[in-house]
Length: 224
Image (cartoon, rainbow, N blue to C red):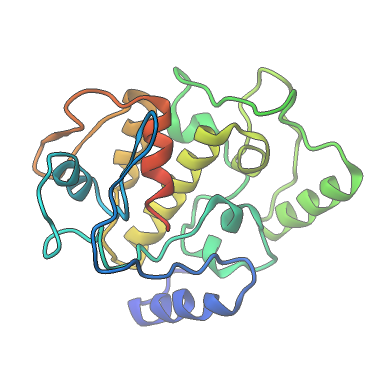
């Protein structure tokens, strides 16, 4: 059932009381752009256009929320904890933890495992998966090696970039629902498949595809 904007906003606010949600604190007023040994840290970035201007060296305190405001989004640790009747997953309906990665991102660039298999096999974890699946009116079917894992498995067993891209996609859906500035779901999909994406005005950001480590850095800085 779709909720009106006031109800959605209330759900978003009330979720602070859930241990699931990773509350996001505002950054200091000074722009944070650190130089790491082999890759840049981009500071707070809540939109593709903001990221594009930031990497171009443009000061954006009045036009992009990357300096002093939090993005009000979750880490992958928040999304991977699926509670019965979880209000956060309700805000990204009809996407559920049990849709496949490939149904969203396509199959040309499959997700990468951190360990040796996607399937959740430890009995206590299988029980958790079955309980979570039941809340969404489905069942948990373990994905074989080489198969197309569901988001529930990716958030637990994907490598760092794979987890972060799913997290970014879910945050994009959430932000779209509650009408807050963020990357669009389509931009997150393009960032995964091409390591760059187009802004609403058609500008390709960044001008050249990012490395995997740069994309991880960007995605992590969209929820801190």
